[in-house]
Length: 344
Image 1 (cartoon, rainbow, N blue to C red):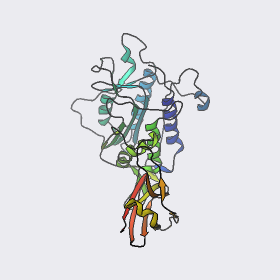
Image 2 (image 1 turned 180 degrees about the vertical axis):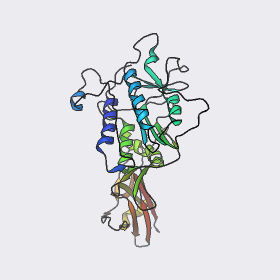
Image 3 (image 1 turned 30 degrees about the vertical axis):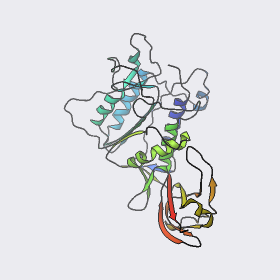
Image 4 (image 1 turned 90 degrees about the horizontal axis):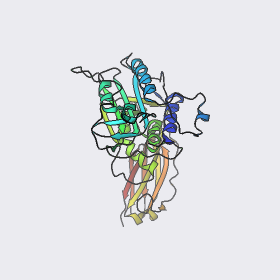
């Protein structure tokens, strides 16, 4: 298989997000990040990395996994994050391919590992919170898992599960994972936006947090925006076990708000105001006039208000010659919608 240019950039972007931080802090501060990267010959990425990370060969992957697993299981309250971006195939299990895949023609899958059994094995180990992001294709290779494709860890027969909260994020079986040449992949970019607040929800104390369930709920819309489409034939496979907070944001994240009228033509004779309600320090919003939008990403043209504002609770008021309505509206990332019924 040909060497790809998007996966090393995607892995580097994800690692830097962990080490340099985004708009908030992890519930458990990152203690260590192991990064393995393999680049196409002539790729300029190594010049941007400083010291070049180890290559993502199967031997290096196994060595790094053993050390990572030991550190993660040292305390039950740690958060374990396993990220993979590159080639993958799907048989009865998902197999992920190392950079030296097919080193020996007779046993090509000796340089691959079985993700399904690896994940099951980790559920029997600490820590209690585990995240798996697998940004790889799952195209069918027409066969059962070859004997040489071993897991990175083996499940223990009759051993109980220890993991209590888990997120596994990947494309659905038999789908491709798409990336831009020499750029971060679409799924990874959507995930980074989710961690930066576009999957945030407000907790019981009024703080904005990113939870496992929030990522699961937002990832399809974020991927659609990265791809520039209005729908996905099949959504991202986002499996969660339980739920927990991953990050706490420093403040309210940005969100998009779209407001429309029914009937649609009433928007041209209606004025809209958007007044911050909670938190009280939210900045004021200039709604302006409803604008005619053109058809884009499969969505029909419409006349509506489109705004980017801080997430929170606002009072929306629509006023026309025949109608005057006010109501609260909770604006949440990544995108909230509201509609007003306007009398003729």
